[in-house]
Amino acid sequence: MKRFVGAMILMLWPLVVAAQYFPEYETTTVNDFAGILPDENEAALSAQLHALKSETGVEMTVVTLSRKDTYAPNISMEEFATGLFNEWGVGDKIANNGIMVLVLYADREMRIELGSGYDSAWNSVAAQVIDRSFLPAFQQNDYIGGIMAGVTDTIDTIARPAAANQDPPASDGGTIWWVISALIAGWIVFQNKIKAMFARLKPCPSCNARGGLRVSRTVIKPATKKDDGSGEQTTACTKCGYSASSTYVIGQKSSNDGNGGSFGGGSSSGGGASGKW
Image 1 (cartoon, helix red, strand yellow):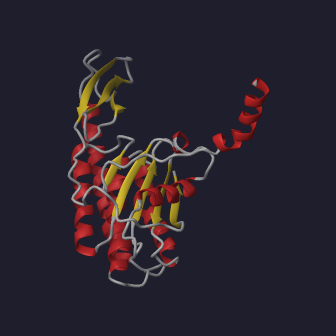
Image 2 (cartoon, helix red, strand yellow; image 1 turned 90 degrees about the vertical axis):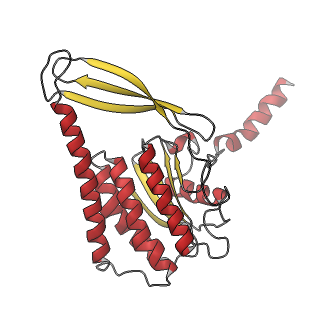
């Protein structure tokens, strides 16, 4: 009997190793599983994506995860993005015009996954959006600014033009949208740097020195539609070693996503673009 069980395990092991699964979505707009976005930014993104859907019919979603390997360690990031897109059914099932922005925070990788209704020429446009709006901010560890600016650029450069049956912009075209997105990204990065600078100028409660304080936040328990989440904020001084931590509450996710709680049944054939930082 033991030999039989052992033989069965050996036979099934390749299937176990190849096993993969995808997270379940909580809304059709923003699923910040990595806990990157403050409530106000998440609400602004959701409103932006709702407006896109109501005005153009394009269903676009933003997803943040910590690591891909938690769900599918044996496939590439591109394969994972396509699988997640199809598992959720992003976009209209006839037009297949959905868009997914996937950010893998700890893996330092991202992808714009496009529905199968997009011509392959849009792939290079997606790569341009990633290079000019997402990655510059991500490289500075400004994930909030990068996501906000990148989503706006994706909407203005891909979603709306494609919905209006416009041709993809040439590689040297789309200048106005590049300038607008660059200005938005620059402003958000500037605001975040100013906030960080003022925080550092506060005197340390231990050594009273200025310029040494650093504040960081870590999500302990992501919020869901049923329960609040929690996080830990740490203030540390680089000059004297002082450190103090406190917890904060992350509000429940809104259950009103305005789309009946489900995606439209669209699919992707693997189109889009990826980026690393």
